[in-house]
Length: 162
Figure 1 (cartoon, rainbow, N blue to C red):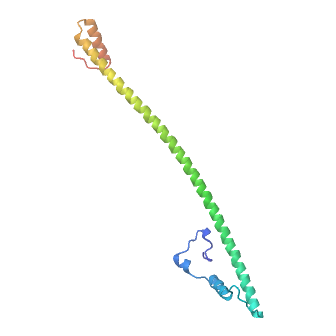
Figure 2 (tube, rainbow, N blue to C red):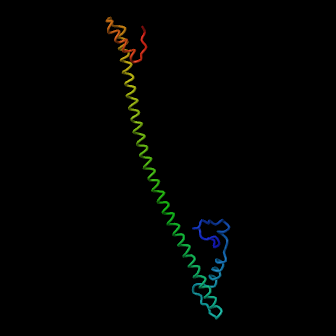
Figure 3 (cartoon, one colour):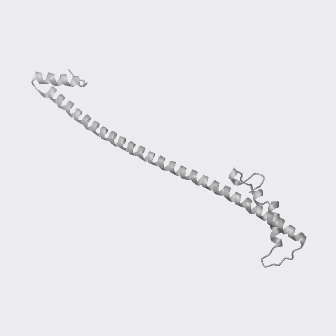
């Protein structure tokens, strides 16, 4: 994280150079670490006490800064988690809506297939009735029945030979 542009939470993502660049803060921390080793006894002089207190104040300020960064990251994480949760809820709602639309489409398709099947059946029945009327018109010797069949065929739109 860079000090001049703020935390990642503000949208700043460091470049590769920034990731590997050692800051003055990091150099100071490394210097403090080099002075102190576990179990090492340090002789304290008046000048070194001031330096030690300065180092301690610096390290405390670094801890506070890190605490703020952690807090910002936690807030960012919570916001992202909330956004993710809302997106998942929206996705679930859209999936449910799509399922309902698909169910409605399947019902419409099924009904149209049933209607088409009924239409084909009615068309076949119509053709059979026309054939029967044509047979009655041509094969009957009764002129009234023949004329009735001819008239009926004309009414339903069938061309009748005179």
